[in-house]
Image 1 (tube, rainbow, N blue to C red):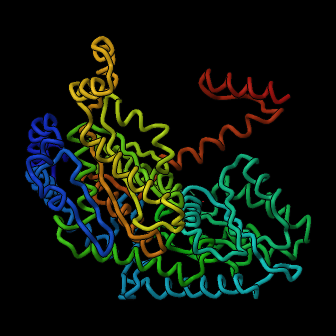
Image 2 (image 1 turned 180 degrees about the vertical axis):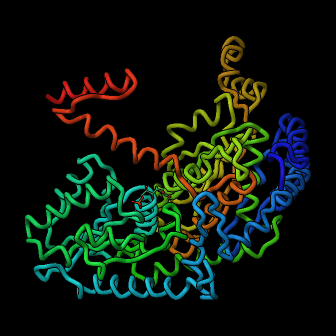
Image 3 (image 1 turned 90 degrees about the vertical axis):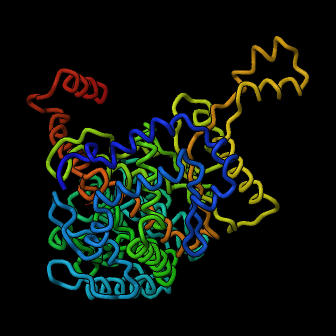
Amino acid sequence: MTGTVNKLRAWKRLERHAKKMNKVEMRTLFEEDNKRASKFSLQLESMLVDFSKNRINEKTVLYLLELARVRGVEEKIQAMFSGEKINFTEHRAVLHTALRNRDNTPVWADGKNVMPQINEVLAKMRKFSESVRLGKFVGQTGKKLTDIVNIGIGGSDLGPVMANEALKKYKAKDINTYFISNIDGTGCAEVLNKLNPETTLFIVASKTFTTIETLTNAKTCRKWLVDALGEHAVAKHFVALSTNAPKVKEFGIDTENMFEFWDFVGGRYSMWSAIGLSIAIAIGMDNFEKMLEGAHTMDLHFRHTDLAHNIPVMLALIGIWNNNFLGFRSQAVVPYDQYLRYLPAYLQQLEMESNGKFVSSENEFVKYNTGSVIFGGAGTDVQHSFFQMLHQGTTPIPVDFIIPAISHNEIGDHHEILIANVLAQAEALMKGKTVKEAAEELAKAGKDKDEINSMKKYKSFPGNNPSNMIICKKIDPYTLGMLVAMYEHKVFVQGIIWDINSFDQFGVELGKKMALDILPELQENASSIHHDSSTAALIRYIKNLRK
Ligand code: G6Q
């Protein structure tokens, strides 16, 4: 494939088409076609993805599918599943899908079937998580380990945090999970203050086992434990999740207590691997495997379904349409389910770390937008915060709404009200309210002419704001697996179209190195400070305040 993506005929055609579609009102599209909802929605098992509330028509979809075809989406999907080194800057295969390959068919990377090693670690996770849950693997003083602390950051934190919260209803009653991620000592202090060393199990989660935040937090926790129970206690209270056995050993954790994963699993794609150990202990390995099964169902759908009926592909294309052709650079994700409240933060990393890139596979700076700005929060909370801008801001912000039909807590009419809210928001964002309609409403409410004239614009809503509605039956482990895998594949497809590598993260790595340069300069006796004048002055200012 030659040339940059935005020079492709398929891209140019979409640009021309967007000029027309940008003027189209979605409410008119709905009035003109009563089959619109069924035309523009897809279903997989009980999950429905309705993307009809976008500024699209049949031509848009055809043109987007053509773009996907010429960008080789079908071939790249097969390349990922078959272990090709599609992470082309780090020369690695991308095989998080193998972690949940419940059919156990061989998956090859570098001429080796990776399934036996994956199964081995899953079996080890089962054995260990069951021992902890049954009180067989106990702490140094013989007490049951009931407080599980995951120490990790980024991809070694966000998945476990999100899934532990999402699946709270499936947790063993006597197991509590805690997370320490930030280097800010407050994170450590606040968690440790609550805990009893005798009942605490620390899980040090780090792919590389070199991340300063995680190692510093782990050292602090180790000292806290050793001070209370002695050096011998470490083997009973610390396990590691990593790809780096030598570093784990160097840290003082027996590699017997290490759960391995591999370079073909990216940090932000790793909650299906040993990184999910805290989830497995909390909800049990059977439930953890149900989560893998749900993801596997989405994998099979993604791998074997034609582009037009492929949910992750269509979500990716709609995202590209909104971002690159209509110029909407942000994307809100709003789950109407309190247990999913950490999903937006999880997806923020998944999308922005994967597709916040500016160099193409041909080693050229790209000349078009790539990843969108992802943000969000749980509905209805966020209706009372940033939704104002969705309804009356100057630029549309596409939204993904997610709602389960059945709540884990069906109390009174709470869930009906929640459902009513999500549907009403999507409808209002699509329809809006014209100035004329606002004036009519004010008149109906008995306002006088002056008041109608002075208020009608303020009370109007531009509408025509795109949204997708994702409906599941209930947020159980299986559904969560489907949902997360759906987003992973959406991100991958967008990366293919933008011709970037969704699987490296040099930007994150830069931050890891830079802080190390400044650290010695913060010391009392640092001889010199080598930075721009702002950074140098800030270092001096802070040092003065700390005296
Ligand atoms: C994820 C990123 C990043 C990573 C953290 C932690 O894809 O690479 O978020 O997960 O920087 O890295 P370690 O797991 O190596 O400590």
